[in-house]
Length: 413
Image (cartoon, rainbow, N blue to C red; front, top):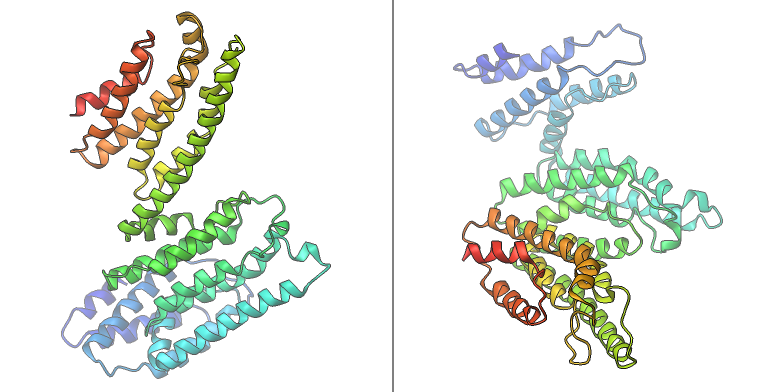
């Protein structure tokens, strides 16, 4: 194939090279072979890539280039080989040239027919009442999985094929789950979820390369609420990589979303602190001392949510703020219930060491990540918040509050 590429670079060589790669593909399979199966051949992919490249060059050089005969010949060969189990015969080249010949109307018709089939399959699944085994989480995924290769075909077509395929992957995703969580059973990752996520990533990247201003806010909003709903049912495999990629192209929207998540977590932390602090106050008025670190143990429950937030687009800084706030809510401030719960210094150290190590380590990790992302990162606001708590706790001879991370942050400013 290297010689064909060289030929394409010669004067008057492009069309000859185009016809030659087609001839090579035609002769690479034995027409008289009666076997029903061919194994995958490594040469098929580079041959397809070369034909695709040459076809695009032909279209650019000759804008009226319309490979009607080529498409007909390829279609015949593809159908012949598909019957023998071969699916790698010039797929990308064929789909692109097919869309040139058929035009925008044919591409839209392909999209509309496929979308209608997805809808019909979904409606049929809903109608299968009494057949629970056919309507569960995995069975629906298996039935919808058949549409992925056809959406891939659409994405290879010209005349807005990739944009139509992008929307159709999202549509397929929304029709791959039933509305009722009762049908999810014990969810685990489905092959379909990974296939859809990878396909949406590919399509989005291709569209972005052609249109740097591509910012699909509608897609991000749609994905967000589906992801949040499914997460409540312990499903976390719904377009995770795509959502992160698309969100990175919409920093303002991503920042607002991360802020909402931060406020939700902060509200939960604040409520837990308020309830336990009041209970501790009454406990101390009864002249009793807790035998365990109530607040610290409760605050540990929120570390998982904070870590998830830190991995979101624009979520790292809100996560840092939350760790600092969580530290503030990990001890009581009431006059009747001092931060040491009435324990001795030794008792405090013993009962709080695990919690304080965990939050100090987490804040260290997040600060280091922030520093790697922005070498000018200066946590001035966070230092001020920590200093207030550090000075307050020092009055009770408590000096184990964020010792490493506080020192690290002070060294950054």
